[in-house]
Length: 125
Image (cartoon, rainbow, N blue to C red):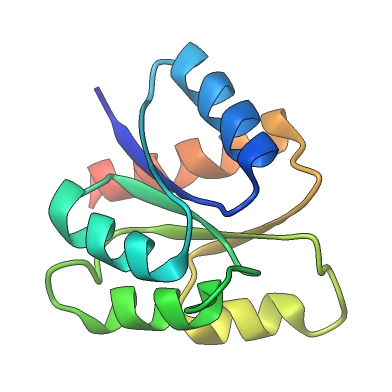
């Protein structure tokens, strides 16, 4: 079963996304902040990470930079999730090392397409 790490501080978002991913056949590990996300990326070895960018403490930008800087986790694709779809945010996310970018509220079919594209690319690579 393909494991996805969901890094999200909002309980309702975490619950909704995790249930929908499990229904689609994914195993879901969850972190509530950037520090926990960095630790779980290393210990759980997920196939993909969904990273909320607005997190308490270590934010999603910094957590992604640390995950991408570590040889153990740098190959894990990261999709940034943000409600702050401002001009320049996509570029900021890509500069932090994310592999793709999606906005909140999450449109599940669009997000699943991005997940499957990244996982397919990883499997082929």
